[in-house]
Length: 79
Image (cartoon, rainbow, N blue to C red; front, side, top):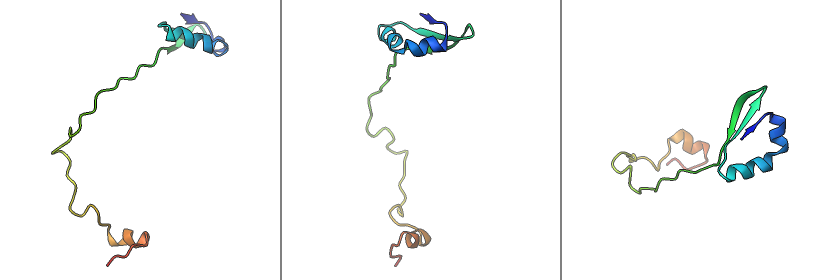
């Protein structure tokens, strides 16, 4: 379906959304030239693989300790 103007698309947005839900694509034009396509949203979700980065990430031995200047800025005891 082609909508001729942006104004027409604004006034008929609910109707256009229903058409998109029904499987149609809606092309919105400005000055006779297509500028946008309204299509249904489809989320591509891949299954999560726990441990996919195992062996690629290293946490340093000093991860839990802050440098003295940062520790004092946060009011932490640096001793």
